[in-house]
Length: 567
Image (cartoon, rainbow, N blue to C red; front, side, top):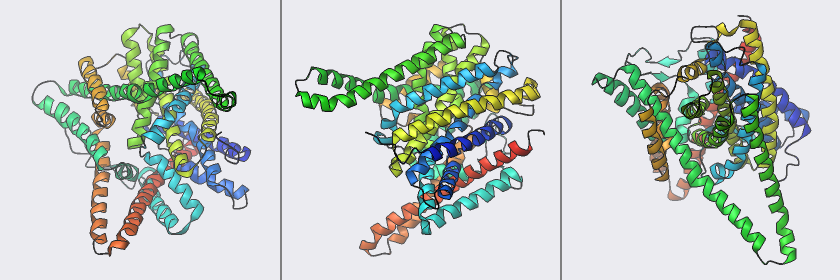
């Protein structure tokens, strides 16, 4: 049995819940005010290890710290799921219909779906697919370095400090620009290099092949469809952007369906067949008794998961007035969306949760006549589930590296997610009550950029043919073994993000080439050891760069919460 003893502790839960409340409040403010949400996982890992060692007189296990930081970081992405969707309803005049009760139902529904889906998806994405999960890897390396010290710790925390100072100069002091070459005017294309150590590190960690596909999607969308198509007179720039976004969403949706059909459903069917065979088998009574307990636990867990999903469907149907058909669609497509989220985070470190919420929103709008405000509830539920899924999978990857109990992490995630749901709803209710719904929007105090996009898309898919084409292509490419999710992300995301990640991948190519040339001068018996050391250095330094921006991003957000609410 998966033991949680010594990993999920009372002191860890208390530290995690306090940190979760603070980070969640900061995340709500950051998402609404700045239109961004840095991963808090590395920051939470450092804080967790620090306080556990302080309370334990310098002693704390890495697994306890890992579970504690899992509790602490869970609420941030729940906050993101709400902040990236619900304010769009306020912008369209539905503030009274999207109050604190509706937000709470949306948040808790998304939390339940996210937890159930990730419990089903963990083994495939963490153990079988063995994806990179650069954010989770950075958290694991941070804990290892913080516990061990030495040269590895010096490299990681040196890189972290450098990236942290750089981020503070960029976001806090405004001394460093956020974008290079942003003034290059290409109609419809968000050209530039995002001045982000984190995104460069993501490109370095993910690797050349996957990022090349990502960048190819960006070139296709921005210079093929938008710039090329509009220059050729095939369509105007606005139509081209709609075609590109629809195509990108379709490709990602198709890849998500492919994950379910190729990896999840066959394994579920084999499990069910195995359970039926075991019940019909003629093994001895003692063997049946020995094997019976795990099977009973599996059946109990499956029954509880089914009840939880059914409860979400009932809450959506009656509590949020979605009706039966949209509620069933939300529950079913949440599994597809969380699979998409898990794969996206695993390959890129990016969780475009509002995109996945938009996809399901559009699917619901296409088959039923749902009032406008309820569409935001649909997007909110799915965005919260996908945000939580990305966070959970990062934590599971860190746990896989450190040998942490998945059960302890999942329980910790559930605790932190519920705390995050309560805190994020409270903060959003306070903000809209204090400033009014007119304070949210592109030209308002709280720009709420993602929610504004959702509000724009509520009217429907910009290009249904492009979406359908992308859906079919994404499904077929995934079944053929092609990284379709990466292609879809490149098509959908702003070009400057794809370009920056691509530069990070090119940096890895250069680093590997230089290291290989240096190893060529060594004796053959020394090359293997040096290759391992150089690979570790690249991983640790890039993890430090990623973690430094993440940590300082959270600190900037905390400062904004402390000093900026009255601004």
